Length: 139
Length: 59
Image (cartoon, rainbow over all chains, first blue to last red; front, side, top):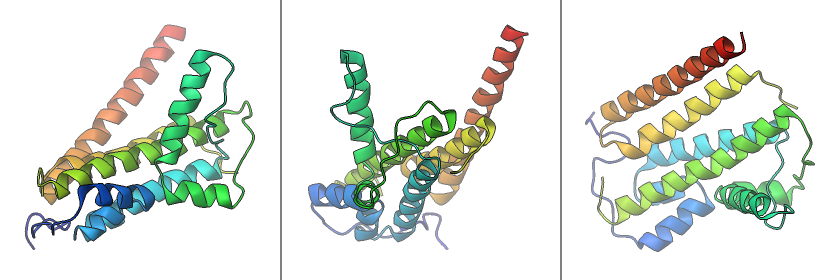
């Protein structure tokens, strides 16, 4: 087995970087999968999904774009909302199924919220990686 | 509702972040595994280091 066995032993097919990034955002790991990096795609999908599910099981609240009363709170809410949204379809499916726990004072729910944010941020990293593979900056 | 201690939450978070960091930053599988383990070790060092530091501060 070659040293680069998580799907990078062959050159990536020519794809639109924007489409790849959009696909990576919508379905975590799908961009890598489309580029022939199937092993990496599966690991990205599993990692993002596990982080989001742990957060949801902890009943972590989702950030709201219009939440907060002062400027700092609004910035925090907006940043959190963007990070939540970065999970793509996982976020939309959760919202579609009515996932909306109240923002309560509980350390477990607070940890859960951080896990959901982390799922989106990890997917952002994967989106950048997929973009760099498409533009031949890496294998 | 899933309830985890702070330590397990931190370890899980470190584990998931290390997997992704190892995956997207290096070129070969060997480098990825090594970097992932390195990141995880750094997370653990920070976790236990800061934990002990806070314990010493508070007595």
